[in-house]
Length: 412
Ligand SMILES: *Cc1c(COP(=O)(O)O)cnc(C)c1O
Image (cartoon, rainbow, N blue to C red; front, top):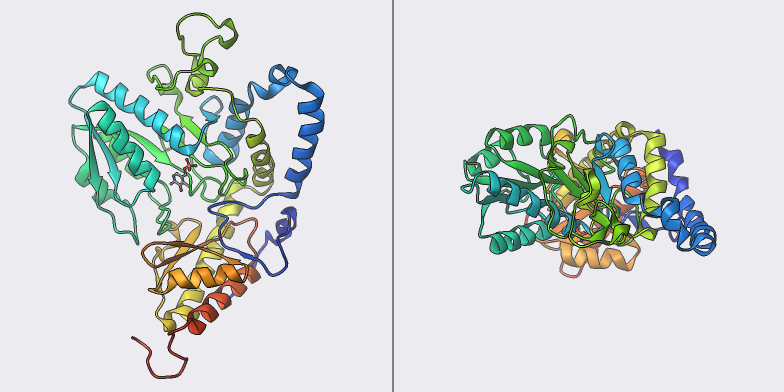
């Protein structure tokens, strides 16, 4: 049955798309808020044109850290002074992973492995391989089921006294498997490893308690559930206890103790600022401020409740409407183990997704045969889910080569 939506009134905060649009990709690029359109225009006229270079002293210089603190408070469960914004997620993951493995190796030269799971996001796997090649380390792969994700058993099998760093995703980009962060972090710590969590697919849809969970390091995207706009900069989290121990590899002037001294030699800033490298992308941080304000107003608990209601409803619709057509749910059924999207598997999904895009129904396609439905909680309505599923059903039955309904060929 269609769920009630106590947050429906917030749908109107977003800039509307074309009439009839069904947007199932807020987990790849969130929709803009109306407030953002105003904020960007005002910024150009008042701050950029009005203040020019003075803007740096009047707040821009500290924006990576002030926005970071706000992210920490509203969505991440991090006390001030541990979150920063800048670079892309890929670059931040690299910086943090490199800092972590170098530190671990310095303590104990035998710690020469990075543990990564085979279904982690491509960029995470590639950068781990790059760091391993660069530093003479080994990537220890955990084979994970692409319809589930990393669990205690999988991680335990890979940990040893050689583990330097564990690099995992909180929510798996394909299946939406929701990893048990506190449990897996504890497990890694018992083995003497540090953990770097990729929060790209959870930040803004699944609450985290990074401090309480004793996470070491984390990074994630702000253009997905945080609606920062295409290419908005990533965020990074480094627990305070690690600040003075870790040296990040891209040491630039913005992470220097006194950038405007412009002196010889690099002295890292105390605290979280040392993880910055170059001039921060100010324009790219503005839109996410509006989303953070909205999430603050609603509360992460209510956001997660709506997310669970939407994905549970999607699972119901798969069972009722699409399973009879041969579609298989490729995401966890247990909402406790599921993030903010749902993946449906069928051999024809590549062509189905192409047909849906033609009619302004926008999910995305992930191999093998996965149609991924992202249900960004604050911008997706229940009727949008209904219309989207009806469109998927129609695209499946009307594709060339599909058996006509009732022709008796079900189960092929
Ligand atoms: C989207 C995503 C990224 C993207 O990284 P970029 O550097 O922003 O391109 C990285 N990791 C995960 C898990 C993602 O879902």
